[in-house]
Image (cartoon, rainbow, N blue to C red; front, top):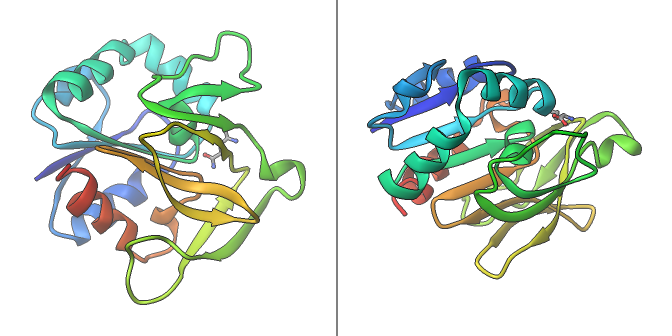
Length: 193
Ligand code: GLN
């Protein structure tokens, strides 16, 4: 099992530490050539506009799409990463392009209009041992989900986690809590799909 974490900007180190704690080989991905042979890729939180610019500079858009579509690489986007894998970014900045992998529409900085950052206990589908503590930092929410998308968690009536086959989006930061259950779910359920 080999999971890559896109390491252009944002909270990528914490994902690597959590994945390694689960006994998985985890690599910081800085060049598209490193995508070969990955079972899964995590696109971390950070600033989606900055990550998108760097993805353009380094030529990541088509290689990520190709490795997902034809090489079976699962993809999980957290926060800014969820924005980047969505079919549609609502209120995207001019020129802000998403990968368009997952059939969701996300609203950027959605909770941020009310309060910048907060934590909340989430009832996350398929996870045992009680609620998962969600850390939300200028988080998006998932405004629309297509027919093939399973919602995994809600907060205040908004979808904050979802999966579609080998794709997963979480609006919050599971790598910042020290609780590895969402990472284990990605490895066991999403990558296995
Ligand atoms: N608001 C940020 C964005 O639009 C996402 C914040 C985060 O990843 N914590 O990119």
